[in-house]
Length: 428
Image (cartoon, rainbow, N blue to C red; front, side, top):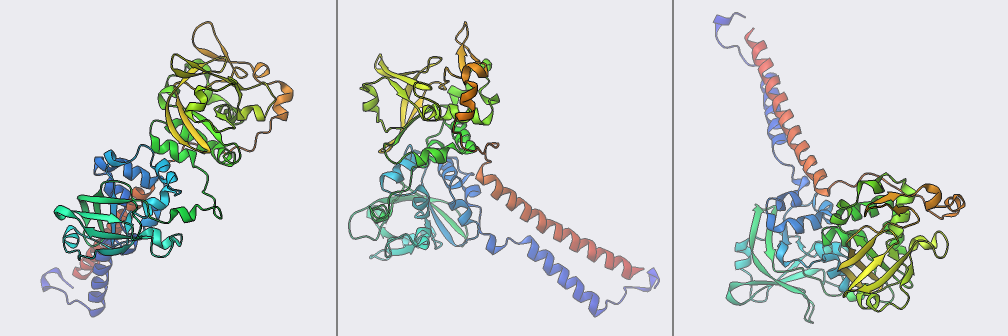
């Protein structure tokens, strides 16, 4: 057909192909309802809720929200979060993940919906109710109108419990996600039943405690990567444990000569155990400790008298002497029987593995001085699982969202190319 003979007739088959391609391209460009909303990514746009976003990302809750839609999230501003949310939850016999699930309402509520609350209040199911761990309907929240047009979120239990006031709307993805600010963490009633004698409270997740407390990223990564954290949790039973945790500044202040990071995995585990006493000591007990020379978990894997800490009170503070390093306790991170966690000013280096040079720096002791040849074989070191520190949980979700967007754009481009090709062929 010549170019000057006018427009070519369009066959019904070709018209159908064009229509199908247009629909596919339009569908690919739209977000999938099943994918839900990346809640942590939404919160990261608001610096006042960065700590709450990190808390979500550190638990399985962020992943559980990925496939849900039509939600209301009760987010707590940085200034209103407790210093250690995990410790706060543990004080109520709860796991922090379940407390966060209690802040996810399985219904989209806008500010106008809150303004129309009935006088009796509105009962809304939370994500915690879906776990089956909530007694009766205590996995729901009751939204009631308070004085001065405020809205209070509380447990439906008849006895007074944890509650918080809605401070205002933060953001919304219409009919998919509504984020409301609340004045504090809300703990559902009935957790005392879950933590009864018939169901003992779960062990304290020390890695999560350190992550929540901030300033202990290096220690938390080392604990998680080595697998020693689970060993500590197993040791919480019985006499309990006391953990001395160096701050990130303490790790940054290590002299280059100590070469801690270059240690083999099994010797890093020994250093980590050297920071733990196999007894629960609150701060007051450490201040009045009778025997200053204390064995550590590392002692239990070698022989008596080795890998000990000398703990004394000096000038009103608690000093810890390893024979190589003198450190001090700077603050209490977590203290709830049978676990106490204290921040220390320096990394505790055992004299069996490190030696003091002429200056204040430390040097690696030769393997023969650090550990006798016979000890290396007798040391009961369980298999370690060292790996690079885990990535932030939020990155995976953001990458997935970016991939979904890229796929939609690709389909759109393919559809346009296919349409152009047919139009060109029809004109030839």
